[in-house]
Length: 246
Image (cartoon, rainbow, N blue to C red):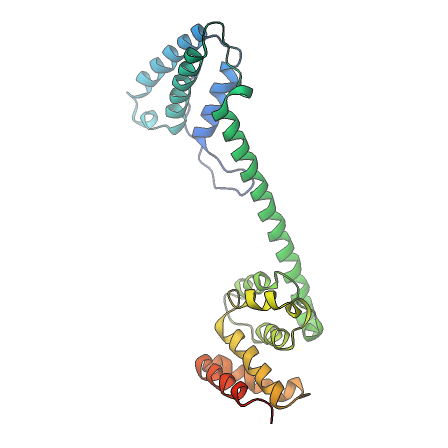
């Protein structure tokens, strides 16, 4: 029969989130498996007895697991009562139990996907950091998801803007390099990259139309303008684009 327990408190983990109520329901279903209606009614009486006992203790009166166990015994008792004579509890035919298991499986799959993505972003950040230190970042081809890598690199740097990383993104966007050859990727980047980077890219693209073949070093001022006054740089890019090539 169920016995109330203290809720377990520990730091949340993406791999093992603790839900005392869910644990309580699962314990009840495991113990109830194969029980008849009479056995479930007896188990419910016992659960109610423990609930009354716990209500006298301040540290147990608000235990979510205890409340969930009692509510589950009540639900299962009603389920078997409606099932008719001779019925026994089987969690495999319990729609509520199966729906919860399916939701748990989906949540676990989502957590695993988040962990895999976090590992991918971390590895890519390490790669780009190594290229920066070698002075070869400019030659790297941008990939899908690199915007999240920029965010991680920024967090690693104490949230300071890293001019070389942002310049790499701006040049890649302006020249449609790597992943940004896809118009959909460039459109998505507009929601993922900060305004100065997007403005820098727009200004570079406008200047490239006016002066085809200009060297990257010759256009270094574009990044400084975009960071100093993004709106003015955006206005300049729009003005230059409206003029077209000379």
